Amino acid sequence: MKTYRFSVIIEKDKEGYFAFCPELQGCYTQGDTYEEAVENIKDAIRLHVEDRIEEGEDIPQPESVSITTMEVSV
Image 1 (tube, rainbow, N blue to C red):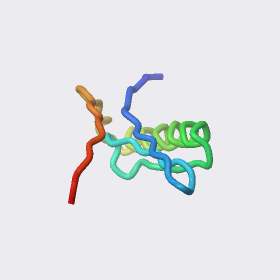
Image 2 (cartoon, rainbow, N blue to C red; image 1 turned 120 degrees about the vertical axis):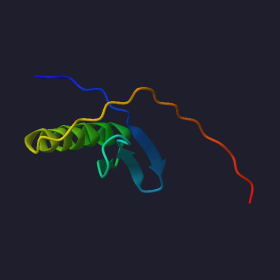
Image 3 (cartoon, rainbow, N blue to C red; image 1 turned 90 degrees about the horizontal axis):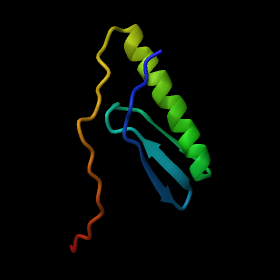
Image 4 (spheres, rainbow, N blue to C red; image 1 turned 30 degrees about the horizontal axis):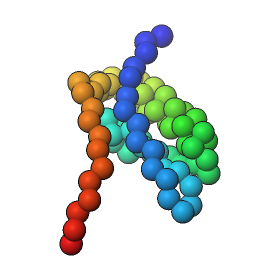
């Protein structure tokens, strides 16, 4: 069994939490709580990686990750 490391973004809004993995296009989920979103994205990533391995596709690994917030006036 191989271990992979991915970045995960979790955003909170009025309806709960939205989580996604930028390295794995289309790999996202949601949850009513932060903890639920974390568990859901772990499952989504695992299933996504399993599918890629079965298809013989590469598993992208980030070299570095930077995240910030910024204000933009319009």
